[in-house]
Image (tube, rainbow, N blue to C red; front, side):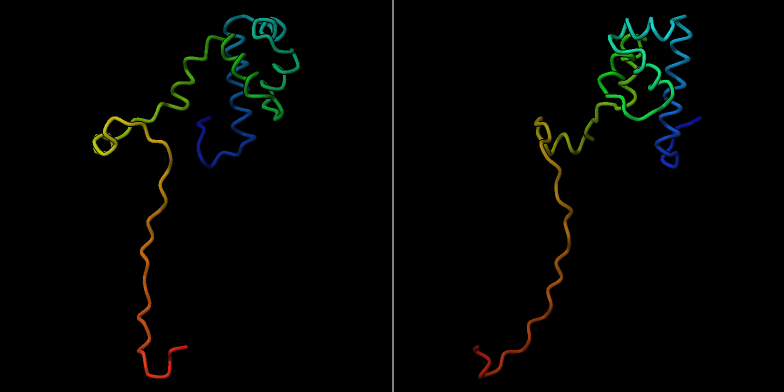
Length: 119
């Protein structure tokens, strides 16, 4: 299954769990062996492979490290690279915050002033 924006969270978690199980089986490891190698409980492995919610991200990372998949996460969330124009604009500095959207302010024409409207 290809993961896309249209896929539900449950479908993505199920797919990730299936891929972790396949990686574990490729290394000929039992769930218990993987749990020992990763430093997590066997139940955590079971939950991850079943795509169940409730596991911590740190447990997921430990399992990926034990399966030698941690380096592949670099492609999962790549380091953003600024465009050449943005690099020039920033002058070698690192961006610290997002900017607000610039909205065009449309001012209504002022009403014509007349004597007696001072209040």
